[in-house]
Amino acid sequence: MTITILLFAGLAERANQREIQLTLPEQATVRDLLQAAAEQYPALSPLLGSCFVSLNHEYAAPDHVIQASDEIALLPPVSGGEEPLFSITTEPLSADKLIRLVSNPHAGAVLTFVGTVREFTHGQRTVYLSYEAYAPMAVEKMKQIAAEIDERWPGARVAMQHRIGDLQIEEIAVIVAVATPHRNESFEAGRYAIERLKQIVPIWKKEMWEDGSEWKGHQQGPWNPLATYDKGGE
Image (tube, rainbow, N blue to C red; front, side, top):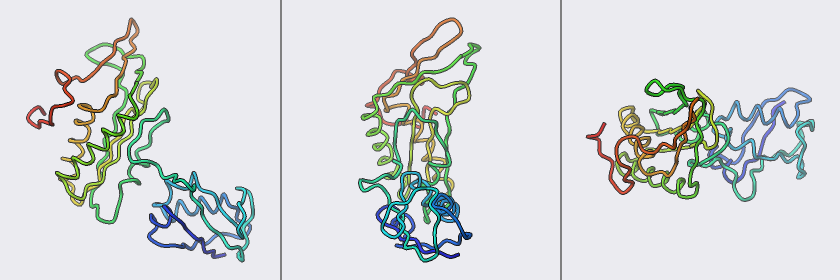
């Protein structure tokens, strides 16, 4: 059966239309509908986890069976719900999510940087890392970096997420995604983003070793967040 789904707010903005159509099998449920919407309309995927489905003006449970004659709407939370471009989180990070956040019709390249926890540094074995952040200020500084990138590479779209708490070896600590019209810009802007993040965003890590621990800060010289980015130090 083919159904029409009404969209509102951020959903309609992402889809660039007020309704979409899906083809579903008979006896499909609300859960099936959400899965099909994520597959057929990837731009909506980041929002669907926080959305509700309305059938004939009533909120529907995930196992509710859909009828072809139903009036169906996808409803984002009334106060928002879209995953932020910049965040500090205790949850595992996903590069796919950030790629979807920055991807747009004008982008010919999307570059991602994924920073992971390594086991050995200068011959010393790390058991795990513990990250801490001044979260509100960190998010504001991420936004500042995106504004700086927009000045240097107009049209670039940036997303950054950093995880805090205890992270095991090979877990993702930070992800930066940059979408630009051309690939050279994505490489340049992506490098700028991660280096600037390390320079001005208030995030600290504690290296936990087999025989001790130590808080680590900026590793490219004295920490000076008031300094501008110097490509000569690369």
